[in-house]
Image (cartoon, rainbow, N blue to C red):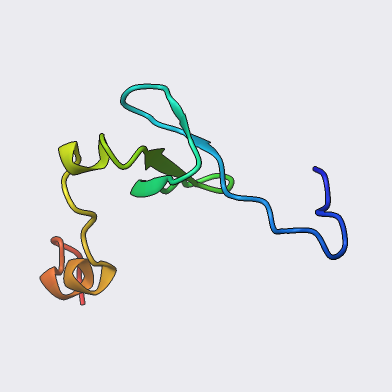
Length: 71
């Protein structure tokens, strides 16, 4: 991993779109993948493809729903 040069401009985030595979410097977070073992990861899309994904659920809404788990 390279460090930015002191006094230089910060690097823009660059990610690959999960839908069209284009590298974009304006990534939009469309999903968070959680795993039982090890760290999860984020899934990004370009601004043109992002509207094709459903909105991410709010964690607090999921917790209030119960999801069939015992209280």
